[in-house]
Each structure stands twice: as structure tokens, then as C-alpha cells.
Image (cartoon, rainbow, N blue to C red; front, side, top):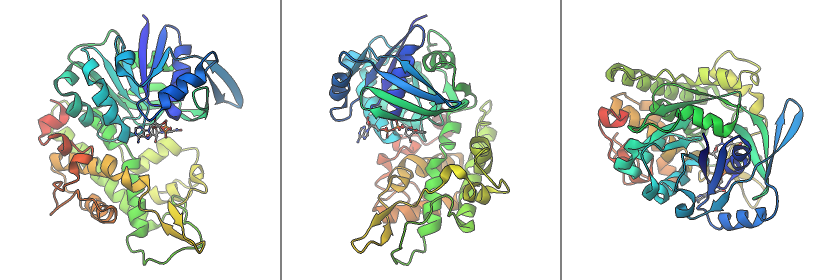
Length: 399
Ligand code: NAI
């Protein structure tokens, strides 16, 4: 069966998928990029030329040639007749694509967030409304590759491909023409092997960056005395025991939320949620020198070598923390606030999440939590369930 895939985005992941998907048998790939003039630039760059992806694996580089049939910013040209839509853009851009594609949603469609990141399913159901019911929604915890584009609209590079990729599926009331996981696998090729299990909300809760970054930021800077530094401190490898403990405490709240949802909602499986320590062992097992606990997993993780706290350089050459970086501006509204929103509906107390959110919202001039409730004026700009009017367990779980 021929599959027509629509790739949404114009960055690294979109470039790679736009090259790899059409190289698979019986797959047509189209690209929709709504951002700035990316569609025009990409189309021009490809004119009369090849589009290819260099894939690094086992010390070898394979050049895969595969050209998308169209790159456009017009959903009317991109969307009709597609079987599967794959979002490969940061979460803050998802709403724009959902709005643009809404008139073209048809029963039996498969929509994939790759990665979906926290609250993907709430945004889909909130923006597509009734039409979302006929759609099979999938969300994955990351991109399949570590990748970048080398030449815009012409060439991309896969530095590494994951062996497996974890995700979840929520079947729509109209079945797609083939099993949704098999369909996406056909589009991606053999690797990574897609593993789908559990409820979609498990993937929201396992969007770990959404609480990893804010926990380390808060742990490090909460008591900052305003003194500048000679150089930016190490973000991960410089983590303190106190910050790691805060992260672990937040992770306990996430796991408690998942367990409570499973207990309260018969037939719902949240087995795809685990503590951050387990997540590190699963995802970074080969990079960690000391696996004793969460603290040592971060402190001795070679994959993080040299990565520093986001800082701005001052005129005198010193450095100050940058609280306008995505570890705050994206990871609060599209991460920990979403998890807090799910915990609220589950009825799980979250003192540690709250400590971080109160600290972060003040620095960012935002208002999410007020008097211990998610009722601040900036809630509509988050991906929390509350932003989409989802306030009951039944609505949360899509039961
Ligand atoms: P990217 O950083 O290349 O995305 C940039 C693209 O996002 C732009 O080309 C544009 O199409 C869109 N965009 C940027 N600003 C926008 C705006 N203001 N409005 C609308 N659209 C805008 O993203 P990348 O690298 O493709 O990653 C996609 C997701 O996968 C991200 O969430 C990233 O954290 C995650 N990820 C990326 C990995 C990688 O190796 N590139 C690895 C693992 C996860």
C-alpha cells in the first residue's frame, strides 16, 4: 500500500525525514513549513538538484537520496490525500500547524508528534475539537535521530539513530488504512524500532526535559545572590546533590500521578512512566560512569560533557544567568506546568513542582500558579489540560 506522509516543520528533524521517507518503498513525502520564508527557500534550494541525508552508523556514512514531492507553506496544497502527518518541530510551533491543518482533518488520519512533548494530545483535542475523534494520535518521546541540516533545503546529516523509540497511540474512532505504528515504521524505515505502549498521557509525563531543565535551573539559581561569574557553570555535570534531590522529588510526583491515574481509571495503562533515575539508565546507560543514583547519573554522564548553564556575557567579560532561555520559557509552559496540570486532575499533591513554578514564573513575569491553583492569567498560553478546558479525569484521559 502506498503511503503519503506530510512532514510539518523546516528544521533539522524535518530535513532528515524529508530525505529518508521518500527513499522508503511506496512512500510519498510532502513538507509543510509555515515559518517565515522557509518553504520558498527550501523549494528554490532543491530546484533541479538532489536532496540527500548522510547517515552515520558503525563508523560508516551512507548517503540516502530521497526528495519530497512538494515543500510548501500552503496547507491546501500539502494536506489533501495524506495518510499520516508527522510533526517534527518544537512544541511551541505545534498550535500553528494544528490551526492551519484543521480544515483538512479527515477520519482515519494518523497524526504523530515526534517528539510530541508534554500536552501534545491536549493541543490536538483542544484545537481540532470533534474532528480529532476520528484521528489516531501518536506521540513519541524524542526524535528518532541526533541530527542537523548541513545545507538548508539540500542536505542533512544523521549523527546517530536510536535503536528503539518509545511512544503511545490513541486510536481514533475511524481506523487508519493500516496499523498506525506499522504505517509510521514504513515511513521511517527499519530504525529506530518503534515501541508503542500505554496511554498517551504517559508520553506527556515522560517529556523529561520539561522538568529536568527547570529543576536544575531552580536548584542552582534559587538562592543566587546576584554576583556575576568568571565563566558559566556546568549545567549537568556540575549539578549539586540538592538540585538532583529536587529533580528526584519532582520525578516522584510524576510517578505518583501516573500510578493514581492507573488506579482511578479502569483499563488505563501508565506502564510507560518511570522515575528519572530509571530513564537515565535506559537512555544513557552507556554514557554514565557512576550509576549509583540520579545525582551520579547526571554528574558523571559523558554525553553532557562541557554543557553549561544558559548565561549572558556582561560588558566586563563576566557572566550572568539567562532566565530568558528555553529551559525556562519553553520548559515551564510546555513542560512542568503541563505535568502539574495533569497531577491536579489526578488529585496528587505537587509541592516540589510548585516550588519550581513559583520561582520560575516570578523571574519570567508570568502567572501560572495563584494560591496553589493553576488559574493565573498566563495559563491559556501553556499546554496544560486546563488551557483547553480539560478539568475532569474522563476528559483528561479521553474516556
Ligand atoms: P529545530 O530547532 O531545527 O526547529 C527549528 C524549526 O522550527 C525552524 O526551522 C522552523 O521550521 C520552526 N520554527 C522556529 N521558530 C518558529 C516560530 N517562531 N514559529 C513557527 N515555527 C518556528 O528543531 P529540530 O532539531 O528539528 O528538533 C525538533 C524537536 O525534536 C525539538 O523539540 C527538539 O528539542 C527535539 N530533538 C531534536 C534533536 C536533534 O538532534 N535535532 C534530538 C532529539 C530531540
